[in-house]
Structures are given as structure tokens and as C-alpha cells.
Amino acid sequence: MRAVRLRAWGQRPVLAEVERPVPRDAEVLIRVEAAGLCHSDVHVVDAAAGALPYRPPFTLGHEVAGHVAALGPMADGTAVGERVVIHGPWGCGSCARCATGRDNYCDRRGELSWHGVGLGRDGGMADYVLVPSARHLVPIGDLGADQAAPLSDAGLTSYHAVAGLRHALGEGGTAVVIGVGGLGHLAVQILRATTASQVLAVDIHEEALALADRSGAHFGTLLREDTARVLRDRTGGVGADAVLDFVGATATLELAAATLRPGGELALVGSGGGQLTVRKPGFLPPGFRLSLPFWGTRPELAEVIALARSGALRVETDHSPLSAAPQAFDRLRRGGVRGRVVLVPD
Ligand code: FEH
Ligand code: ZN
Ligand code: ZN
Image (cartoon, rainbow, N blue to C red; front, side, top):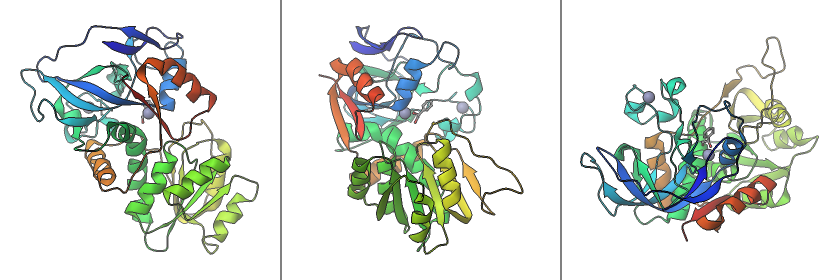
């Protein structure tokens, strides 16, 4: 079968021919129908040896949907032919967190040489992918694989970030989304579908603000010197109850802090490497709370898929054949992508 392989640190991903795996024990073999391409894939490919716990060679791809092709003799909880999406964070499988589908916060993460499918373990930028157990699978019914795949990461990460803030977002509340890309546009939709809050969007590109508008944002503005005031004015001066920063640069973190209401909450999702000084006395609003959400849980992925199947969630996708995966990496790296790249086995 074909697979996009990271052969060694510092090498470009290559499309190679590898053995199709055979499921053993509780393993499940998935015929891939779609695999999303994430900025984290670029970070993995660009990582220096030792920066990540992974041990190349392995197949990339951590946003994967398809159908069950074969079952190991101990596999349980699915059937050949079932259409599924893979819950990508794979933990140790035996701690209290993994036992409840919260592999994203596995208690033994520090001991593992992987973070999940395509992240140190063989992933789904391939014709087939092997899953250790059916517990990592969520049925998708008639949902398109090209929608389900990116929802398993971009959608799930956004959903998990919103879930951590939902208590702060009641009637008359305001949520700000900074960075309306592959994750941000889904966060706007999730906020509109699951909270009563006003949703304001900030980006540096006009076309991203157009995407925010199509996604249901009540208002969008380009990032400028006076953006904090512009946003505050939309809240009647009190400030935002929650800000989701999908960029994570110093400028966006500072904008978030300047926009938040007393008791406001900031979810830092983007890996921009920016910094924010937390000090007392200091400039952060009283009651300020910060979260650094990572990916999401298996139960939340089922909720994301249900939202999508209800029509409340739609990913803007940019399809590319699996055979052109290396070129898709280059496009993503250049910033030439709107929405989410989805690789489809051709
Ligand atoms: C995966 C592995 C490491 C860092 C970040 C990620 C995200 O793309 C998962 O959503
Ligand atoms: Zn990702
Ligand atoms: Zn665990």
C-alpha cells in the first residue's frame, strides 16, 4: 500500500510503498477514505532530532476517516464495513484518563514515544491504517469522510477549547476568536451552535474574515492597533467573557488580555510560541483564567460528529490526492491554503 512516510528527522515526507498491515489481537484495519493535513504535521516534519519523542520511520496523518476493512481476532465494538473516524490521541491505554477516552491527557504521556496516530505511530496518510483498538473509533454514519477526517482534529480541538469556556458564555456573553483558519472557522460554528454568546472574529486577512462571516460570526475585524477598543465597543464596554487564541503570538495574547472582562477566560490553542506576563499586581483583569487545551476526548469527538451530522458544523476543505501529499505540505507551509487540506487516496 502507499503511505506518506517520515523516514528520518530532517527529511521531507515521501510517498512510499509499504506492507499493508494485518490486524492482530484487538487491532482494527481501516481503509482510509480521507486524511487531513495539519500545521502540526509540518511542525513534526521540521522538528530536529530529539525535539519530539517519536522514533521515525513512521507514516504521517493524524486526522483520519474511512471504513473498517478487517478485524483482529480479539477486536470488539465495530464491524467490517462500518464507516468511522479515528480518535487520534493514543495514550497508554491503561491509566484512569485513557480508560475514559481522555487519551489527550494520558497520565503516562511522558513515558510514550508517540502522541497518537501519525504522531510517532503509523498514521492515515496512506491507503490503510492500523488502529490498536476499536475504542479509538467513532462511527460517522453517512457523514462524508472528507468532513469527518478534519473534524477529528481541527474540529475536536476547537470543540474541546469551547467546552472548557462554555460555563462563561451565557446569554449576552461575548466570545472572541482570534485566527480564523482551519480551527478558528470551526470554533465560530461551534460557538454559534452550542452557546448563546455573541461571536467576534479577528484575523489579518480579509478572506479569513469572510470565512468567519460564512461560519456565523456576528462581527469580524482585521488586527490593528485599536482592535481591543473595537472589540470592547461591541460588548458595551465591559469586555469579552472568553477569548480563543488560535494564533498564540505575543501580539494576540496581549490583545486577548486587553479585551477580556473581569473574570474573563483565555484559551490558548495556537502554537505561535508567544508570551504573556502573569503577575500580581499586573495588567491582567481580576479573575483572569487561562487554559491550554490539547486536542479533545473520545466522547467529545462523538459530539462533534453528531453536530456535523445535524448540519451545524461544516469544514471548508481543500482536497488533494494522496499522491500529491508532498506538494500539499509545501502549499500549507507557504500559507497557500484556506480551510483544511484533505488528502484523498486516488
Ligand atoms: C498533535 C501533536 C502534537 C502537537 C499538536 C498536535 C495537534 O495537531 C493535535 O490536534
Ligand atoms: Zn493536528
Ligand atoms: Zn494513559
